[in-house]
Length: 515
Image 1 (cartoon, rainbow, N blue to C red):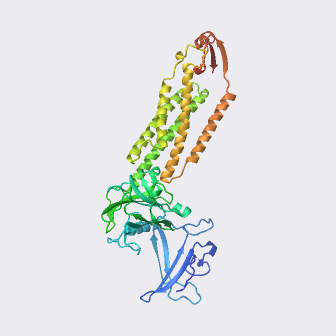
Image 2 (cartoon, rainbow, N blue to C red):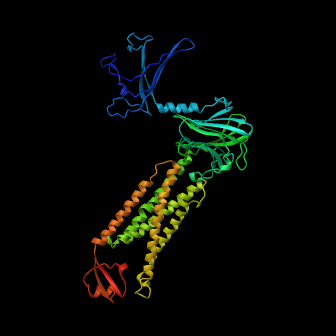
Image 3 (tube, rainbow, N blue to C red):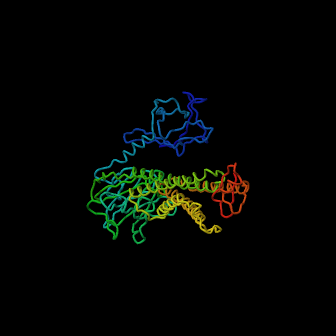
């Protein structure tokens, strides 16, 4: 057969030449790796095939090429020429033409359905493996038992990290199970081999590689091309201190597919029970598809993060700012400060409640990680801050030594300020840590840099406002000896209304701020 080029044409008319059917210039054409082949079939029929690769959408603004939709109907035209070309190599009039609608997404779904069909006899289409089953989510599993080992190959029609493991019981749950994980990103970058992992939690902190002495896989590899990811390894059936695989009899396996090549929270996870010596396999009907659970946990952690951020990025900072800038609102700042602290504590309480509930539902352990410990500490500190504010010492509770700065009220002010500062610092650290954890667990965009920028801008604005008050806002201060504010009010300003800033009153000298 011969090989010919494939070009794109503009169809301006039904006749060739002129402005009718004209080829698009080569530099504008989006056809790549194109070719035309002909061969004679077994029944002496001549079969003509052409193939090409085309971009769905040309990013060149000057291009008038029509876009092809990845999802949704596309209207395609086709035409077939005569069996014998004219001698001058022109296209000529077609002998058959038509049109059809095509939705690539629908075709992909049909492909997935066909990919999930399997031969009940588990006959492998790879000669080096004895058995094969097709699992859900475009996954195929091959295996053959050789002596006291089993050789596995798991493939996925797509680009993602893969995991195949053994469940610790017939329910096929992830927690307490063991798995082999292949990471294409590291396999391509540093030739990392698939490793065995212990699965102690639903989150990345609980996906821990086994110690070096237990990494006994043979000929392990992870490979990937544009459309498929394949992980191969040979594993001993029974290893000391690890979950055994039965040579004959049922074993419950688990497998997972990631959102992409970077190891993070999986996109799909299933379990199935199978006898490696025969088929078919038994798909566990235990609602173990983790996708709905992942969505539920993800939503819960988003809610946890929203309320935590509300407390430590908005309410607590605004409450502190109202006290620092109280000269801007001398009669109302105390209300913003008090109710801001109370609202922040309520938001913290709800965030901790969501965290504890979600951790329990996902099978995790409580208060073992740094994030957990800081979180519960912030809840207790916030509670102390609110209670301390409600029981602020009055002026009548000053020490007998009125000249001393170490009176009860000043000591309370110092402790209240230090506690508030500690809460703010820990809260900022906690929110940043939470953003990192969420991005790692769910392979999502990490918002930490934007968050840090927001905190820096807020601190600069607050500092600038405080400096402005110090430099440009001056109070008229009159100092009297041996007089109380009531004396001053009655004797010196009988007809005037003024505000006394109580926090600045000291005896026997009284600083009176007139506003």
